[in-house]
Length: 296
Image (cartoon, rainbow, N blue to C red; front, side):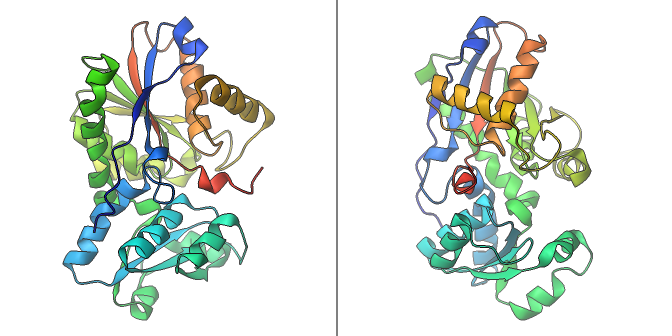
């Protein structure tokens, strides 16, 4: 199961505050690999798809919200590659651009309410859904788990292949937004301690990101920074102004749930002198632009 997506372009990230601090950055544009199966979502999905195929399953069932980038990519992949998809959604029925797309692409939707969605990590949560959809493989929220992390390890190969075009012999570390922690864990596993992975959490610590990351890749080779600004998808005027200014200066479209918060965290680290001059970073644009539609 492979939609033959192109490699993500690795581009110089031009921002005045990076230049002033002597920091070089390149941005891995996962938002450009496909208009529908966008961002890091395909990398997290591909090993789940291979597992489903090997086990003879007819499709996948997973979870997300009314703006979920994961469910959007899953539905698009299902439509393109011809497998069934079911989405279990947080909250109550709501028509958003994302939900409309999910329905158009043939995904079967079930709304769990808020309490029902909070039970997604409880023992036995999947049992009734597996009984109802015995031919579908359950996939953790966001495409997470070991299989999701394995798929994200491929990002290292894509970056290494493009370093000569930047005239970089090497780089010092990664900087990326963190939702479930799956992409960060994949990079940590791929790096095996060679380069540091900085993760800017888009969700508060109480959501269990630390625990999920530790379960996937241990405790070494990375740091997690709380960039949530008090809540998942919580924005404010300062963040939105920063996002607009950074987008205009760099020419890179951002969204406030993941990428802008991660870039803000990088800006704060630069401002307090946490990164030495001459540092070279790869910033991962994890996509998420579709989820911002209709929200501003």
